[in-house]
Length: 532
Ligand code: AMP
Image (cartoon, rainbow, N blue to C red):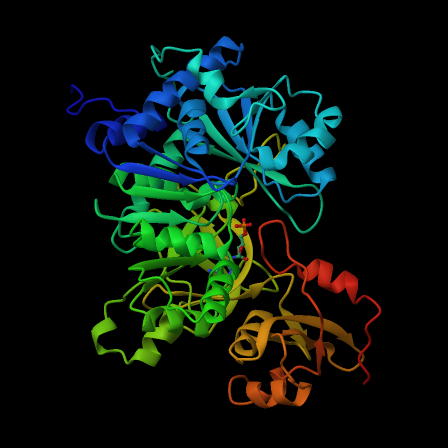
């Protein structure tokens, strides 16, 4: 039989072509690090991406070559996402918060040939240049002071370029995960996986975009493809507002002035925004939707946003899953739920989006599948078309024989499909043979008005094997005591979950992606002992 439908390979170039054609006038606004602002459109992004693709070709960059970016969120970074993929290259988004040794490792491992960077990261570039022998060309996004400036570089081209074609499964992006042990690992996104993931992102139960959406993504473009927003946003033709700095005052001003309806970021970003508004005595911005992910969204955060009239989309995912696995939003029983019940439901991690399959297995044998009963807690495994099969340059697959990837997370699946994440396999605390969720303890503690941040860690205990210790950063000027924290926790967690000690600290270490680093916290307190 003849093929009944037309060929249409799932490649990134279709995404930007569509955005330029169907939403060509929709604006892309950037607030730069120096305070200046620029405006372009989806048509402008495509025109620049064509010039950039041509300029890369002129440098001798070939299909499959890696081009790195060391940059915050802005329109020129967006141009690079489409320009690099459009010429058949692979954009390696580098996290500028990594340590020098990690920066050295990943750029060499990726064999990046070009590095595009923000002037703010010039000190990193100056320091690392001798350690990055594969990088032949440096282009600065926002200044020509130390080499070619991006705008001058692409202006050398006329944009008369045809997107490079190829297989749907060709690579288009490379992101390294900041693993807690060993060297970072590279996750390669393919054109097909990226397009499918972005289409899934358009579902009302995912990002719920419409042409009137104005999105300010705070989640960096260097972390897990900014949750796929730059692709899904192009498909829906939304307006983007980017800020190259993450100062809450700047973000707040932009949100009000540009009519931002949606934003997305890790919990620490939202926390900083709350603190800014409280300090200034002003209201939260009138957002329609807030996507929170990367770490568990604490209940008080969800509650405050919902009281502000903002729909909270609590998402779970990983760099290895492109990254979206699950997203929470209004459920089928939403109308019947009380406000408290809605908050409780949203504090869970939502439901898998089409394409993604989840299961939990026994933590001890890692094979016995657990029931989706809302109580059984086990190791979370995932499979699907935008889930990793093998890390970049790895010798072996990262999945088991049935294609399941072990996430390293611990969770509970509910009968309605909701995922409730309870911990990381490495962080869950085993006390007397029973599991205690460090995340739940932290979230409960974070609900106290005087707690700025909290982290629970399992510490060796001669009788129970491990017992929880809670490290707490107090809010400025607070007189909070350990006893106050324990009293606050008592109605919220099982009695045997109560921490054996509450220690006040000035700060809690974070990873390069802004999450609490339990590893660093454990290292810092490696001499800490609990009495029997
Ligand atoms: P990364 O690859 O750096 O994005 O980290 C992925 C990890 O972040 C996951 O395996 C989870 O441990 C954690 N994570 C992501 N989203 C959530 C969430 N909504 N709640 C709790 N943990 C999360």
